[in-house]
Amino acid sequence: MLEQRIQQQFFDSADLKYAAAESLTRPIADAVHAIVGCITSGGKVMACGNGGSAADAQHFAAELVGRFERERPGLAAIALTTDTSVLTAIGNDYDYTRIFSKQVQALGQPGDVLVAISTSGNSANVLAAVEAARAKEMVVVALTGRGGGQLRERLGETDVHICVPHDRTARIQEVHLLTLHCLCDAVDLQLLGEQDDETT
Image (cartoon, rainbow, N blue to C red):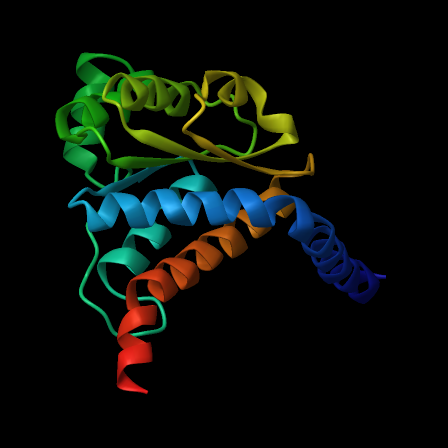
């Protein structure tokens, strides 16, 4: 019984990835173009989320600043989830819902990209960060599930919504991680592809 349940987790995850591939390919490609345009214009990528989504934000920033699978110069990226002094100061002096938005207001510039991750689309601090990013004329790349929640309604025409077609948090997070890896791979391809062609 236990082994069957474990196998079913694999099958369910694989089934969702197959089902989501067609619907998510275009928005992921749009997100790649937004991120590459930001980076090549001297901008930076900021990422935020809560819990597992915070871990995803940190993972994504680490892959950009360090490397994914190919050597390249580090790319400007910041996870807004990592500085405990900033997070606790803002949470204590203002409110927990402002822990990301205050950082966006302080660090964001027009043309920067905010990767906002929320499986429900209803995380108050992520919503506030999106509002701050839009006020700064940044592009928002939203990773959600469950129809997108309130976050879907906060996005503008130039923003990108990558919404996993599922209601279970674990499954949504699994596709979010794959999405972030797709972004890393495609960003590297766009930035390094010409270099590779020149050396062949």
